[in-house]
Structures are given as C-alpha cells and as structure tokens.
Length: 531
Ligand code: FAD
Image 1 (cartoon, protein in one colour):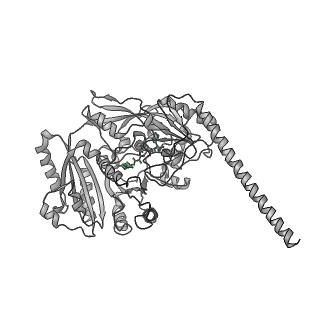
Image 2 (cartoon, rainbow, N blue to C red):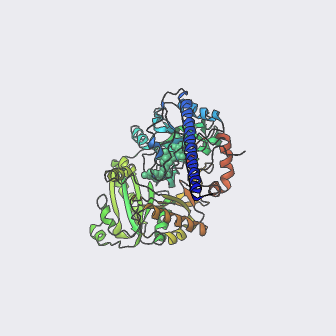
Image 3 (cartoon, rainbow, N blue to C red):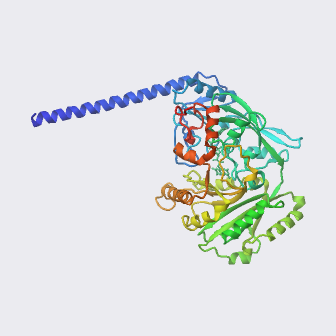
C-alpha cells in the first residue's frame, strides 16, 4: 500500500471510529433520556396529594458534608403518609430489574451523601406536615406524636408551650426526627437518658414494600428495633412518639480546663456515674489554640478574672469539661449550692472556671447561634469532612496518646468533642453499633475545610488525617466503632456490624428485600441482595 493510500485508510478509519463513538454516545444518551422520561411519566401517573418535581432538584444532591453530589431524577414533596406509601409501592412493583431507588431526605445534614439517591427518587420529608404535633400531657409519661420530617427545634418550641421537653438531644436541633433516629442522636444528656433512640415509644414506618406499619417494643418489635439506628434501611419513619419530661426555664453553663487527660476522663466518668450530677456532660480537646480563653470571655464569665487572665494555654493540649445544670429562677440559691458542691469534687485547673447563665432554648439551640455567624461569613456551606468515633473506655487513653497532639497537631479546623456515655442506657436490640463495653466515649472530629486550600485547612489534608486516625485505631485493634458510619464496600460494613451483620441483613430481606431504600448509605445495592 502506498503512503498516500495508507494515510487515506488511517484517516477513513479514524473518521469511522469517531462517527461510531458519536453514534454510540448519542444512543446511550437517547436510551438514558428515554429511561428517565419513562420513569418520569410512570411517576406522574401516581396520584399523590403533594407533588413530584423533576427540575430544580439540585438541593437534593447536596448535604452538610459538601463532598458528594448525586442528582435524583425526581423529588417527592409528600403531603400525606399515603403519598410516601404509594410511591414506594410503585417502585416495589417495578421489580428488581428497575434500578430506581428511594432516599428519604430529612434536613440533608449528612456528611457523605447518605440522604441522596443517584438517578433515583428523593422524598423531601420536611414537606410531610402530618400528623400535626399532638401532645399527651396529663399522663405520668407525657409524649408528643410528630411527623418523621419534623425539625427538633420545632418540637422544642411546641413542647415548651406545655412546660415539657424531649429528654435527649443532639448538639444541633435543625435536624429531623427521622434523620437522627436513623443514627442514634447523641449529646450531653445521653449518659442519663440514653440517646434519642432510647426515648421513642412508637413509630409509624413505610417499609420497602410500601406497607404502612405501626411499631413499638410491644407491636412489630423487630421492625421497631431495626429502624432505630437502622440508617434508613428498613423503612421511612413517617411518625414518631417522643418521650417528654418537665422543662426547666434556665441553664447554668460551665466550662473548666484540664491539662491531664487522665484527670479529665476520671472526672467525666465520675460525673456520669453519680446520681446527683449535672444535666449535660460533654468535653472538648483543645490542641495548640493560644488565646482561646479570650474568645470564651465574649460569652462566659471567668470565676476569677485576674487568675483567668494569667492562665496561658500556649500550644498545650488541654481538655475542656463542659457542663450544664437546668434550673428554674425560684430555685437559684439551691442550684448554686448544688453546683458548688459538685464542682468541689472535680480536679480542674482552678483558674479556668468559666460560667454563664442562658435560657433553656438558648442553651439547646447554641450551635444555631454559631451557624448564623458562620453563614454571615460564608463559612457554613463549606466541606465538612467529619469523623465520629465510639471508643471503648479501656482504650480511650491509648487513643488519646496516639491522636491528640500526635496525629492531630492542632484543632483549628474545628471542634473535637470527647465525652463518655453509659451503655446501660442504650437498648441493645436496636441497629446501632456500639463498642463492647459498659462505658464508651464519643470522639467527634468536626472539621470544616477551606474549599480553596491545598494546605492544612484543605479537604485532602483533613481527609488524610481522618484516615490516619482510622488506621491507628485498626492497627491498635482498639475496638472503635464509627458513629454516622461511612464505608464503600459491603465487606467493610460486615466488619462494622460484626456479629450483628446477620440480623441487619435478615431485617433488610424482611422489610426492604429489593434494597430500594436509603441507597446513599452504600450498604446494599438494588438487585444484588441475594436470598
Ligand atoms: P438526613 O441527612 O437528611 O438523612 C440521614 C439518613 O437518614 C439518610 O440515610 C436518610 O435517607 C435517612 N432518613 C432521613 N429521614 C428519614 C426518615 N424519615 N425515615 C427513615 N430514614 C430517614 N448527631 C448526633 O447524634 N449528635 C449530635 O450532637 C449531632 N450534631 C450535629 C451537628 C450538626 C451541625 C450536624 C450537621 C449534624 C449533627 N449530627 C449529630 C448528625 C446528625 O444527627 C445526622 O447527620 C442526621 O442524620 C442528620 O439529620 P437530617 O435530618 O439532616 O438527616
């Protein structure tokens, strides 16, 4: 073949390949479009009280973590429980050959896309306003019935009208009931009341087959236990009955510092085991934060201003015990005495006692106050590569030695929480996965990343630190469990669940056998859940 004909041949070949590729891509695009428009038209045949949206659904592909964006094909804005049930049943009836999945989205405050559904249907739970909050007040065991899409902050405001309040909280209240009950809901009250999943009497759930089921410890108990901490795998929580108690009006909010981790944890553990103790017990690690006490002064009063101003943190690793005592103004004298007596048993650095007095709502909604300030500076909607761990008591010192001041050399990227809880306050039938000890610590690395940075405050660097912390736990066999867990393979999930995996899987086969629900958790994949 001459050079010219070879060139023409090559050229023709290239043209052919190019045309073929274009045709193939167009074909795929047409098929996808056809598929999307088929699904779209199939969803529009469903008779709902609310509505589906097929455009402007970008919000459903975002979450607080700001790292994963999976666009759904449709968002259901339900007005009734039956809207949710009909939609799930419709997808159930499409059978295993359809790849369509469904994610309930609470307030979208997950970190790694857990409330997203790639090309699936997202249910915007905040649109579900039924049932209207209904309070049972006269009884010895007051409770409120709420929609699964209700925000905890709204429940707080409504309950206070009856002089009541839920018992167990998260640090931030602009989260939905369904979202936190799918995990656990842990905060400084959990040592006494257990997590939020220990404070629910009854649920109404739409299963993966589209059935509406009422469940409690007495009725459909297996589903009830499974859904609590169940990462959205067994059903969509449409109603929850939340346990209440009488509310206080005010809160004494206290911070003290320690330089020794053993003294800090000894005091924390003593406090969570005492009968007469504070109403909220948490803790923070402070690594290399010079000038921190000056920041506190804007909202806290040092007990002794002179001594406090002489205290220098200067690069040291410090541990802050955070406490709160609820009270009513007519009992202020007794409250002060009680606090004094409880503080006298502790071994913090005396010059570092800071205290303030706020309303009950101001205390519980404290993170929202910080949110408003961060929103104003454009620092709220940044990536949040959080890592939450549950560390068994027997290994918390090994963990602290290896991580604080070593892997983690400063805490300027966000707060690091450390506080113990009593496992006896958790129901071991739920799906929540916990370390195997009576006391374990929540250790939360709540970092925010600068989206423009490639340095120490950048996403890659912080994700690298998280990985080093996880590797350290694994290599040391510390028995640590992830809270708000994130894994990418089923093998990792099996290890996470350990002996509980078989129960977790059995429940999936019973309540969502096609693996339609909560695909963003990446535990099961639709169509490959074998019996
Ligand atoms: P989403 O992110 O919308 O959903 C979370 C998961 O639950 C998804 O898999 C979703 O599909 C599923 N889901 C949502 N609604 C339902 C439903 N009705 N039925 C079934 N499944 C559903 N957690 C704590 O325990 N303690 C804390 O102190 C704490 N503080 C936090 C502070 C901030 C600022 C943030 C952003 C989060 C905090 N969290 C805390 C974590 C929080 O509890 C979880 O991320 C929770 O899932 C968020 O609730 P959401 O309503 O935004 O849920």
